[in-house]
Image (tube, rainbow, N blue to C red; front, side, top):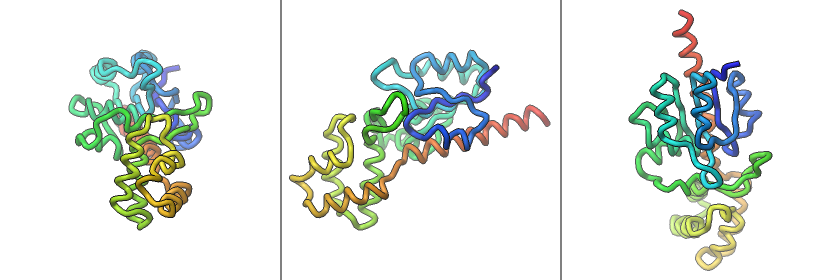
Length: 224
């Protein structure tokens, strides 16, 4: 059976939630090199790249995305690897969705490290926090009066200095003890327990909704 809509998804969004938005989609784990080529060969008319591997295997290649676009497949990217590739290829036809994509496209974010994290390979449960989410959470805490601009800068500096598997809010606060007061760290940590911003998830949801829109548009053109 052809996979008309192929979605590569892992820790950015829960599978059950994704399926409720896009019940017609075929969902695959985070994409590695060659996976988009395989999806194209299996009949995909829309490929939505959200999550992909970074270090453990070869990442999704630009050439396979360009080949899919050239063959008439719609390719949408967001949240993680999808945001990276969409920012690099948006002038060549790949469609980007969401805040993370726009930050990369506009050169505000540059490093792959911003969206990297470690996760359980069986459940896709996140075991560390991606730096882009930490940035958004610090900004939200500052706007909520939990931390000052200087304290936010100190927390972000600590987060950036850590290797990506070590980025958790408790560990960041532990490492920031020399630059941020203990009461402020306690307040910030409590804030993250209830109000942490998961921008990657929000962008993944937006990409799934956009995929559904594109599928409806394509179907309407197919059956006038």
